[in-house]
Image 1 (cartoon, helix red, strand yellow):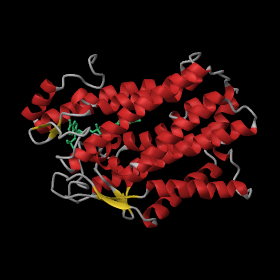
Image 2: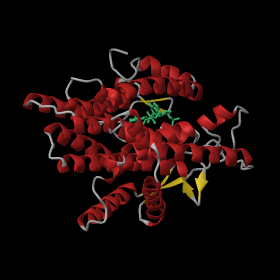
Image 3: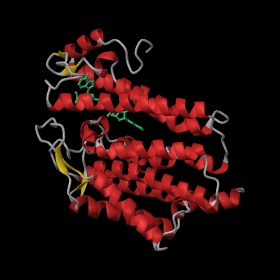
Image 4: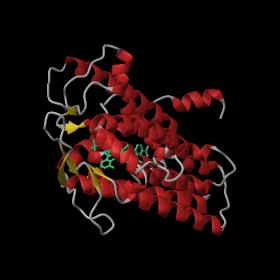
Length: 369
Ligand code: NDP
């Protein structure tokens, strides 16, 4: 592709604006009316709790069904997203800038004093726009932070499905593409199946909603996590059976560690006496879980996520570093995040955290880090 056609394909079009707005409108309306469990979020510093309608799985399945029907009756071209990848990328990027500038202005003007809406203004435009001003801003009663992360995860699946359709259309479907698609599909489905666990994650409880999060959710997740799929569109890899088996093992081990650790923490927060691996949990200071995965390494959940991320790239073979963008990025992100969370927990739990560190000295990777 020459420079001119690259620039042209990067320019937002009305079609990509319409696609994005239709997607958000669907998520806004269907997300508000479809049934789902109402999950209370963590208790905020002023003692209040937000409530989240966890109907993401139903929302996703209905969306795929509607789009599938649209494809069936020739209303929606299955490769619509794959054909407009760069256009959609730039449109979503501009949307993120627009939304976060709006959040900056409305956040600064807010006089609300609740923990979720109280403005945190440092006075530095860049800092406040990047990290956000309010913890949980809303639009028409919709919690925007929860909304955007949902949009990002669903967007990732939609991109993958469209790339898969393009692959089938061009008759280049390979074993690599099938395994990449399968692993991502299971991961995303599992994410929405366990959507309520999201309500106690760092992003939801600790980060304010600024450009960093909105860009991360809307642009970064769907467009960079799908790099392997795009790469496989123009690169052919022959996977040996042994490689497929090893790849499946990396996915399964990663998945069980990732899901198991997050579930143990979630269950522990709900009921500190809940059994962990069939035994009463070891609890430090009545607040921190030190058994199960959390007794092997602090943030063992990150290790699981990293293995899963690696399993998304392994189907692409080892001929190029490009498909490894996601696991490499995730490694850097999670090491950085672990340090920030460590500082936060040390501040919050003080001597209880110090005791936990003594009991569980490893972070992320047991016996190594
Ligand atoms: P965690 O879910 O690990 O949450 C961290 C919080 O958990 C801490 O602030 C503390 O909060 C609590 N906590 C920590 N240790 C303990 C313990 N031993 N016992 C009880 N509570 C504890 O972090 P994240 O939100 O960062 O990650 C959630 C998941 O999302 C992870 O699996 C991660 O891999 C994944 N993720 C994926 C990303 C991606 O791009 N794919 C990006 C970021 C995360 P409290 O104050 O409530 O006690």
